[in-house]
Length: 465
Image (cartoon, rainbow, N blue to C red; front, top):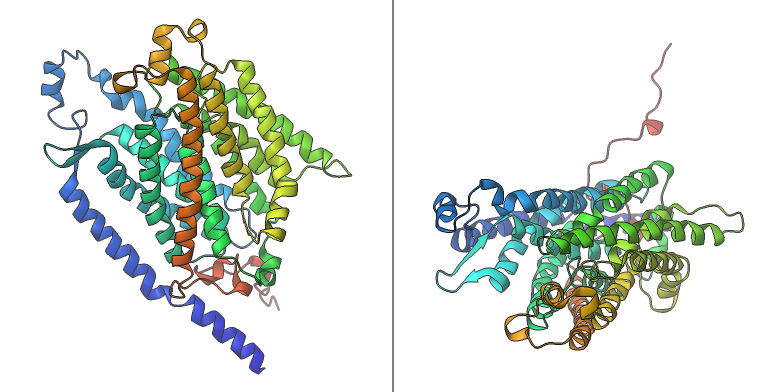
């Protein structure tokens, strides 16, 4: 009896203090966003009321040439991926669907505001006025920035408090903006779909945090670390939304014209190829030949992740199929063998398997992009095509494709380093016992942070007498 009372008391101490910390963080940080937006954020020339004058001065004949009409369909698709795709993909745990989709909603809503500021300070701060001017492309980039923190959440799913997730997002968005600036601006890498800056960074960021927050007694919650029939169906909805819209994700911010067109085609083909190899390996891995829903929910998306960097390059349609073919196999093997190995020998607890869907395919995608860039020739791209695809202009006008390939590989290493080092530091911050995280025997359970309605099965039948 004394032992049970102590266990209960421990749970209460660890779980109830978010009543103060969560509202405080949400209110204070949102008020900070309002103040910072008031100081820095303004509409750009295409969303400002002065558009009429801008249109006349630049000889623009129609409103249809406003960037909104070109970018908004892609923005819609990316936005659905962030909130519906990522959110529902995390609902596979039998008792953590509220946390999966609800906390995804929370940190994405905060992250996109902070991302508009951080990316604005690094990429579009006007030195003359000290203002950040935002338009529809800024919204797409902010969603991309959030994706890194949502990927990290996948490694931590069910083991952290909402306050900890807000801290993960605050630092995740900050680190993302810095590594993105180094990779895309200073190193002048091309990474339209974010294999490097989004997936490799976000994956290793989450894995590093999870490694620092290792829970030796997590086996006490093993009963809840799994799915049931309906939770897997909900997660599959997330998979299908991500799978359908991934061509938009990889092509959303590419150059107008052939680059965007090619990125969508290449991603479309890589995704299709990865489905077949995932199904094949999943079936081969079981003596009965049955499929594992975990593989179908995740590894089928690996082709889209790995195609992120090379999407706008002339990798050829069959090259895209090869990328999807290989990454589907590698990702499925990751779920079968690498995840258990990491947990057993490296003490790395990865709830969603982000190593196999994001970190490893993102790293491979970065190096695939480096190889394809280094192999680019004038006969395939044309002289103007090389300049356009790799943006060999200004101070980069004399850069060759071999040099570009080397910088692409270096950019991948920068993303991984930022994820690992940044994640380790953030993990140490989250180890401070003030965040209201659940006890080892109370993880993966919505009842810790949510009002959960009673299951129908647990409601006693009414007395019909």
